[in-house]
Length: 145
Image (cartoon, rainbow, N blue to C red; front, side):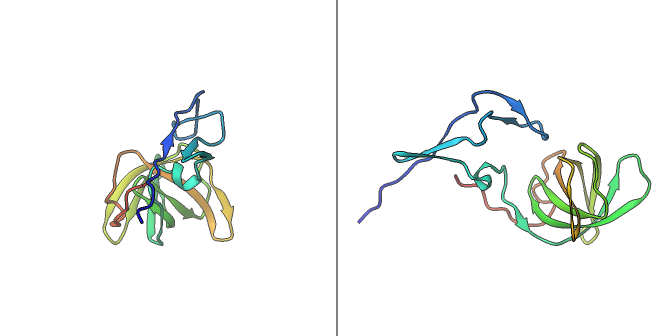
């Protein structure tokens, strides 16, 4: 027996506020999604622009305006950026260059918001300044809502 097809409908934010990455956010915490006769809020995973992949890669970070190079690792990666594990927190909007020493690829990025200190180090979220979907040499499946 064939199952009924359900379609998700996203509603646009009704009042604008801008987040750290310049994206528009609703004054409500989550955008509602209608599925059949029920409405629910989008999950954090559904609100993401791209899939995240757990991947540990050693990286070298060059902070704009500084001569020293920081060693770090990725915690998670996406086609838009990464969560980095560094020895120090970097301020929001700090521009950096990320290099993958294995591939010798470099990409320019910025710190989205001030990170958190954990027992592994400072978790620093960054986004690429220009689209770089192949930087991590990982295939990212498309987001399906």
